[in-house]
Amino acid sequence: MQLRIPGPTPCPPQSLQAMGRQMINHRGGEFAKILESVTEKLKQAFQTKGDVFLLTSSGTGGMEAAIVNTLSPGDKVLSISNGAFGERFADIAEGHGAEVIRLSFEWGKAVDLDAVEKTLKADGDIEAVLATHNETSTGMTNRLSDISAVVKKFDKLLLVDAISSLGCINLPTDDWHCDVVIAGSQKGWMVPPGLAMVSVSEKAWQAHAKAKMPRYYWDFSKAREFLQKGQTPWTPAISIFYALNTTLDLMLNEGLNNIFARHARIAQLARNGVKALGFSLFPEEDYASDTVTAVNATDKIDVPKLIQVLREEHDVVIAGGQRKLAGKIFRIGHLGSVYENDIKLVLEALTKALPRAKKG
Image: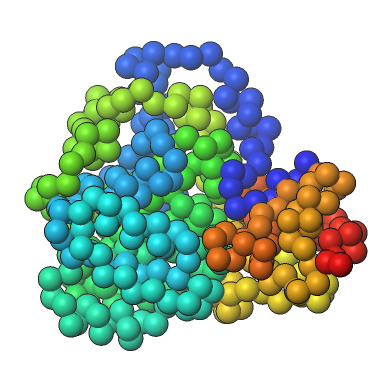
């Protein structure tokens, strides 16, 4: 089966084999060595010298952790959003009592940096900015380096959802002055769902020291304290640690720049392929994502039927649109363990399935 959704992504054989190991004592020396190994490798992938913690949760748990560890109820937060996951980040902050200023742009359209600067200039009480690096709901990648340059001009905290980009698309955490960056295991890391990874800058630690939002399971202080003992505060997803330790070796052996180039190459193949079939991309092409291609469905295509035919007749699984884009777009995920032949097979299946998915 070709699983080509934005996540979970296929696990290579080495990942699956690693997970078959027996359980170990998560308070013992063997797990401590694995935790140390995974943490150090993740720092390389995050391109940071700062702290990196692993939380047993989905990526959304990492987003909540970023909020509750750096903010207090009533803090003003600027949310930069042009898709479903940008809105989710804002919802989490709002749910914990932050005063969220929502700077929302049309889905699939680029962030207006002048609007960001104008908003930050007009309200000096804004404590933090929420940004999504790669928006899978629309198949686009925001120019995080440009967003960061504006945010840091005003010395604000920058919290970044990089769940569907980190490890696939270049994100130099330290160079771009990102204060908390969140990733999720089921994306480019080639392991099952269950782990969130977060990097924490010195500025984020300073915010953490005065943050008053309730936290317990997500507390970065506890994560740091236990990491020094070779442990996590709470019971970790041990099997996924086994797998991640293995896939990080695969990634670092391939080389980050080679991984970024592979994803860019495969994404271009996907984009060219769907355009050759007469479709257009949903986002502005200059911002099209290297991890997921979002395609406008014509009025003649029944998207749920297309997805069904691909799955049942061709063993290819793609995704539809989310929320207001349901039925209007379809999405092809190409992140993690993905190569040119995978996308060629998807495009061949798509060519065969399209006549069966026409309306009327």
